[in-house]
Image (cartoon, rainbow, N blue to C red; front, side):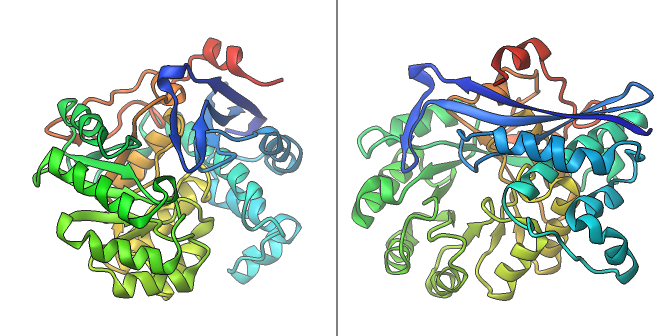
Length: 387
């Protein structure tokens, strides 16, 4: 199981006009990811994903360079099954031996940002190839599912107040019993965000779980006003009402809010999540495993959620690999309660690989197949790889 190659490719998929949507990020006209491929001397191949941005589109060249020039030399010749040790080597760099002896992290300067995202792709590929070496799923490698099914929520909701009901009803017609819509700066005012949310609730009724995502675009006063105004609408949670980096502000909003708060898709490693919890800033933890540090760090974040009696709802906005990794973590953790299913244009989720996304009374079943159960269409990858 020695690693003989570590490669990365920036996959860029332009979206047709009918697949595009507009939010506070502007018009989303492409979908990007960095595909990490690890091959062992026995010929086994593992796939991971590193994300250049939390949203759909982002420039992946820097991630490719980090994987191939900084991380690859640390991995070649190592045993792919020693995932925890590989993670520590990537995170601690030249001080890995010191960190190993001391039992504490001594990270390189890139303890957040692109370096961690690149590590995430490598880590996911290592879990994938290790599970394949044992002819089992990553979920089975982690001890199997903690539950038979997990609630799936449709992640979309960009339409205006007049059209939001029709958009969300399309999701319920597909079988979803939980939906997330976007609010915040894209609406221009708190009043407009409340009006769109009220229109959404009126359209889907009280039986469908409704969540909202402000992408961190409100200030503290706006977020408090929105949460108070939405109290009667029965929201499952409000996601990133203010920027996640504003730990103090997020905690202030949570202390005043009658609605639970969710955050974490923009955060790196369990240390960021530990700080959010120390400040009592969130109710729902949302790590993105292609950003936060892969499955290895995702398990640590899930343990934090469980220990603090909070919910885990992985951020799954990415390719089929990120989706299956998040789905796996939600099933593996006692705290895992929700799985995000991206709506709109998502070719790296729905076209790059063949996944079973079927709903069973609004729920997803555990992932199956060796590794993460993702077999990328390599012709698709080649067609969309940026040289």
